[in-house]
Length: 159
Ligand SMILES: [Zn+2]
Image (tube, rainbow, N blue to C red; front, side):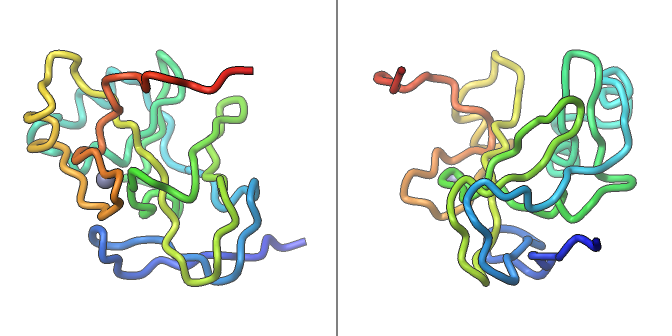
């Protein structure tokens, strides 16, 4: 059975192109797989100069300590999904595959987003992160950068 497409790529108010739901998507649905070339971290480091090519580098998804997916070469539409600090999707790893999954019910027409939690050098200050990896998602909870939050929330729900 062919997979029903539930999204389209078009211009986004957040940045460049974005991915939008073309029909309602239920919570927990796998929207699109993050596809690309399988490369090692060393290969990624050789390919991209982090400071100079920050926007390019964000198409690389780290799977584990050895492997990454580089969507710049043979990527799926998932590479066009923008970051948001208050996202409606999340990237979930199943084995060595990454899927963008709806973390809430997404209405038709809404832009799909997830939190990149971009991993950076721990020595970078918040001011540097905001300059090199800025976020303009517009969420009221926007932390100003697509980099992973440094501090853990003070209270965290536990079971
Ligand atoms: Zn933001």
